[in-house]
Amino acid sequence: MSVQISFNGSVKHSTGNPVKGLSIVVNSKELFTKQSLAQTATDSSGNYLVSFTRPSATTAYQVEALDTAGNTLASSDVFLKIGELNTVDLTITDTQYKGTPQ
Image (tube, rainbow, N blue to C red; front, top):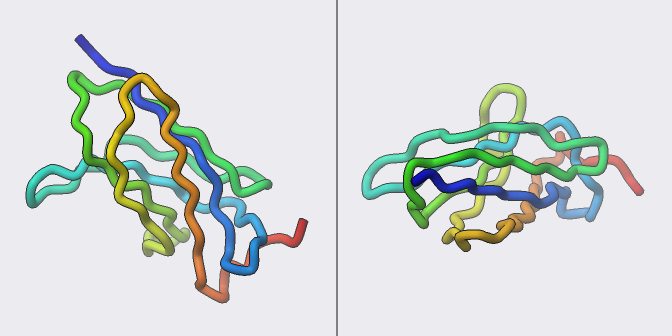
């Protein structure tokens, strides 16, 4: 039986400004391995939503915000809440990505 998994959240700079256009990647985290499962991008408000289906529900995931070169700007390890929307908000400090004031 497959399991539908969803993550949402926002990416903001440490100044509080939302950061648009960053890649968001969800990885499974197994012992000694990391596998990319799904990808999306932040919208103009720095928000994202990503959903995917897995054959079974592993519980350890990592959500990363990447720049256009694929460098990790922020990440968070997450333990999955099955059957719920999993919210992961990320904060970046890189001065190149200060975001847009609201």
